[in-house]
Length: 175
Image 1: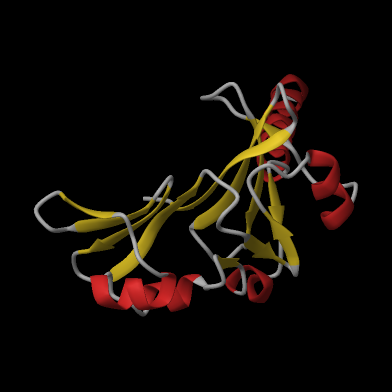
Image 2: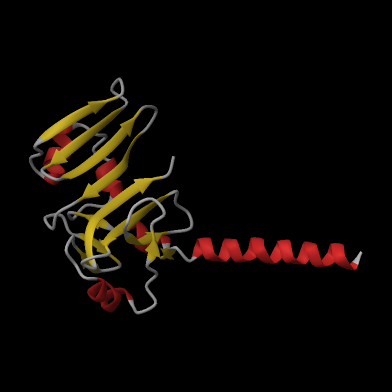
């Protein structure tokens, strides 16, 4: 009985450690702060309000270079040079991904402006020395992720490990 109890405690400890480690990958911020994040000056709610209509997106973000219709008109992506914003519009229209690969679209998180090309040191200065920087399992990059407990989405700042600079900023919705 004692041996069984020890095994149970060990399994419980491993599960707890795994959960704690998983939480340490994301910099959790208050949901009000998360909803106030802007991409090129616009919040996700403002972008969603365009309903992926080309004229409304253009009015909000300016002239796009091209539009890609994907998957039987269930999604639409607006390209702004190297930057891209993708919408899904099946039952409901919403932004599913924003990819920023140049410094032309600033992102503001908790009042701190972040751009492609920023240093990790400047991010730590802006967000605090306890800023969580995680290793990617899929790419040879580290990343800084921001999220809030009420959302199935996130903002990742992908860091080039050779330069220690922000290489890409991605907003995504988890499927």
